[in-house]
Amino acid sequence: MRKPIIAGNWKMHKTVEEAIVLANAIKRDVFDIEDVEIVLCPPFTSLGDVKDVILETNISLGAQNMHWEAEGAKTGEISSKMLKQIGCKYVIIGHSERRAYFGETNQTVNNKVGAALKEGLFPIMCVGEKLEERESGKAFDIISGHIEGGLVNIGPEEILNLVIAYEPVWAIGTGKNATPDQAQEVHKFIRGLLAKKYGKDTSEKIRIQYGGSVKPSNIESLIGEKDIDGALVGGASLKSESFVELVKKSSQVVK
Ligand code: PGA
Image (cartoon, rainbow, N blue to C red; front, side, top):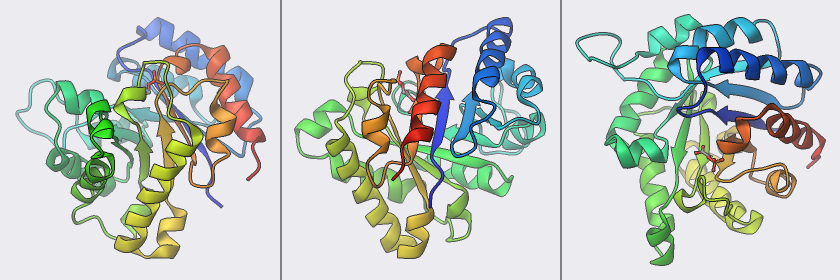
């Protein structure tokens, strides 16, 4: 049984004050949910304060990026050690916005995934095709490149601490989510790749989230699919009402 994971990716939203208000509102309304893992990924500046709000609750902390080196002359970067020490359990790696605007490649994603795992962090590794790649029939090649490239030298024990987020780029922030069938097809494909690499038993234990315009009105049909184990949520995670509804609805889906 894979425990569904609902993670809120706040991206570059919320000042520290706003983050504290949002985290408190979420905490108040999800305190009794045990069958869904809940993760908040605020900007770096709010990690410490959000951690204080969610201390000893059922909510975990995640960051949105990190560098793969432990320390050094890397102006503007943050290391896995820093994230671990501030209380992060998770770190999003290779989000499509980072691939598109900040030069992330499968190689940098792989470096970061390896460094995060080594530090005891759980990476949420993002994969997904662009619209033109889907339309030209290349979606599965791109996704398998992201998976293979991101997981070089990641062993069968480590992989159990990794979450994969399938996020079709055309669905992110567009209001146009992949249909449950479209998403399930890709999730099944990804699990097949993992089975080839790590064996079937291991692949069955790895959680694969869907991301891209997830909202309260589509969450149930998405995570009702066999291989969809939760969601990475952008827009709908910025208001407590919608995020809480996502968590509660996920908790009611029995597979
Ligand atoms: P969205 O973003 O829910 O706003 O589409 C998802 C993401 O980028 O993780």
